Image (cartoon, rainbow, N blue to C red; front, side):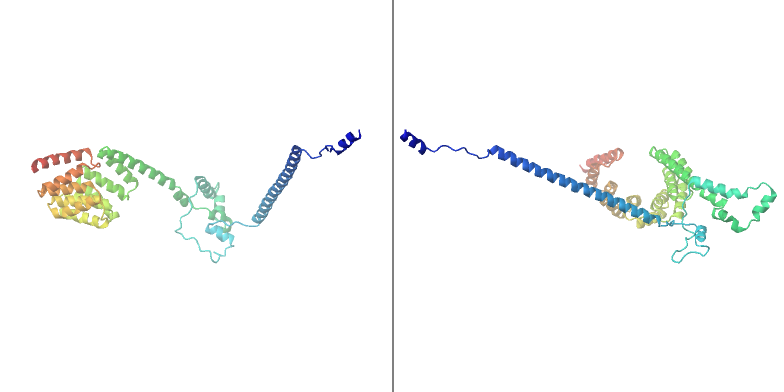
Length: 359
């Protein structure tokens, strides 16, 4: 027994471990972190709320100051009538540094309701019920009629009321011009002429409408009427190029070649790159068989990208019996997409004729 007791005493008895389980440590640490995060979120929310409240307070405070400041400021109108200005300054005239409004300055157009009120107020003092009252009105001293003096006279009111009529006339002119343009596109020259003349009756110095009438007369073959209207245009605007072109064409058709050259040369000086001027002056020289001058203007026209210049040069070459050069230009022009069907058919015919001639 003693031996057994000694052996048992030598054997170490296992001791109970008191370590904390690992899961419990993680749970405790996670809870601590969550608490810290909650405290941070609450702190940030408080700071954000304080910032918003501070901003609202600053805006309210600034607006209050602005309203108080605005209450002490008197606004002066940008424009005052002379009578109102004199009344404001106590009859001492304009203040230094403020020039008078010139008589040529354009007044602001009043509305219809304002004009009606002004006309009623202007006409009111003139209404009397007896001779005694009439004498009192006419003999009233000037200081008692200051309000009447500020208002416009009856004539001024009538003049201002003419503005809507001007607008109405402009709309009528536009309507006539639109109808004339539609008639012109349909080759209804008589209808176009009638509408252009109606527009001219409403605006007798409109030289653009006059030039349109000259063009219509020229299209109808009424040369003298066209020249008359073109001359009226040049009396109003001597440098109006379309009128110079029309009167140049009309002069050429009437046989006055020197006048035609003069008008077209003048137009060319005013607008050297005008394709219509170049074409007409080139054709004029072509008809006079002055082929060197015609070649010059047709070449300038062709360089500008106008197929009319190419066709003109082809005709000049053909008349000079330069068949190959003319045929080459005709073929190039035939491939141009800007040609209308009628001109394309004529060019095709010339190509066939010259091709047979070259064989």
